[in-house]
Structure formats: C-alpha cells, structure tokens
Amino acid sequence: MNSARPVAATRPVAGRPAARKRRARFTPARLGVYAFLLTAALFFLLPLYVMLVTSVKPMTEIRLGNMLALPAHFTLAPWRDAWETACTGLDCNGIQVGFWNSVRIVVPSTILSIAVGAVNGYALSFWRPRGAGVLFAVLLMGAFIPVQVMVYPLVRVLASVHLFSSLPGIVVIHTIFGMPIMTLLFRNYYASIPLELFKAARIDGGGFWRIFLQLMLPMSTPIIVVAVIMQVTGIWNDFILGLVFAGTKNLPMTVQLNNIINTTTGERLYNVNMAATILTSMVPLAIYFVSGRWFVRGIASGAVKG
Image (cartoon, rainbow, N blue to C red; front, side):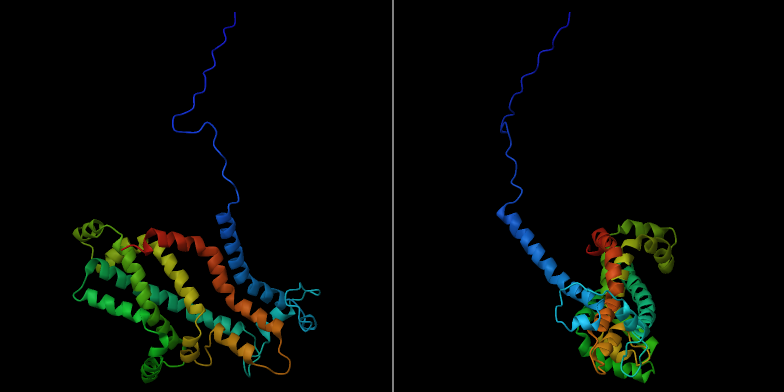
C-alpha cells in the first residue's frame, strides 16, 4: 500500500513579502548612467575612428571632405610611407628613426629610474637614515615642480659635463624626473610589508644589499609592474625633454611625429600624418591593453598603502 507523504505547507517568512517584485531593468537613473558612459565613449573613440579611417584612404577620397565615411578604396600605402619615407625636416626616412630612438631612450631610463626608486623606497622604509623625512619631502617636492622651471638649469649642468644633446644625457634626465614618483611608489609599497620580516632578516645577519636583493626585491613584483607601466608610457609620450635634451640624432618618436606633421612640401598628406600618429601611439596603447589588469592588481596590492 503506497503511503503518500504530506506536503509541507509553505509559510511566508516573517518580514518578507510572499512574492518579490522584480527590479525594473531600466530605471531613469540607470538610463542616465548608460547615456553618460556612451557619450564619454563616443567622445574619446570618435577621434581614434577618424584617424584610423583617414589613414587607410587615398587622398582622392580625403579631398571629398567626408571624414566619417568608410574608405571606398582601402589602402595601406600611407602606413608604409609614414614608417619608411615620411619627411621629418630634411630627412625622409620615415618615423621608424624616431621609433628606435624612443626604444633606446625608454629601456635604460625605465630600468635606471625604477632601480633608483626601489633602493630609495627600501632605505626610507626600513633603514631610515638620519634626515630621511627631510630627504623624502625634498624628493616629493621635485615631483610637483613643473618641468619647464628646471629645463634651463639642467641644460647648463649637462653642458658643463658634456652630456647635453646626447643619448646618455636624455637617459639621465628621465631618470632624475622619474626618481621622485618611483621613490614614493616603492616606499609606500614597502611600508605595507611587516617590519618583523625585516628584523628577522637582520637577526640572521643580512646586510643592506643582501636583504634588498634576496628578500625585498622578489616580493616587489606587483609594484615593479606598476612602475614599468608608468615609466614606459610616460617616457614614450614625452615631448619637451626629448626635444631639448636628446639632440638631433636621438629625437624620440613624438618629436619626429611633430616634424612629419609640420613638414609641408606641396600637398599635406593627411593619411600619412594620421598613420604616423597611430604608429606613435601604438606602444602605449599596447601596454594599456596587455598590462592594464596587472596595473590594477599592483595598485591594489600596496601601491597606495602606507
């Protein structure tokens, strides 16, 4: 004989309605947020769209004046001309010259500024020499002084040691200007590390460099990623320091781009100019898309602690 189980009666929980009302998917506030985000995205993406479309059009289509129209005859010739044959003044070797100059400037400048900033932040966080607070305040002050104020004194100093208008000279300049913010980043990061860890290393007989190289530096990967992203994008996008200190043989890509756009012999080639502009911004854009999440992780893991 089959026995049927009694079905338990569902009782409404006290304080909760028996049936919840579904939230409306589109409220006026949410629509306003979406409208703002869409407007902001169009504001920033529209110039990029115009540059991309213009860079793959022949000049016959550009003369028609419709900037937003898609190309009827797609061509990559402007990109080739921008890279290989565009004129930067009297030289017509394309923007590739500025690209390799920027690489030679960015790599040593990034390595040196991060190395100096890491050592400074480590010393100011754990060893605390006499006058460490004053030294740190002076470094921070240097981070907020406009570059234009320090250009002329630095020109005189570099000229006196025969480094003006040279590759080592522009590397030294970027290292100097990057040191304050790098010191701030690493000092705040090391301030989040327990002091007991440092004291234990000191009890085990570790010295200044041994503790830094074998203990602190392997723990600094997140903040090193943040520092590399900041320095590479900042140095690559620099214009005024490269223009003043690099010299004519080491002009970075941003200065070469300015020379290409302002060098006019006959008709202004807007497609070549747009292609050169995109080529110049490719490295910062690639770093942003590839390393953006690592930047956020590095910030969250201690870059703003202290």
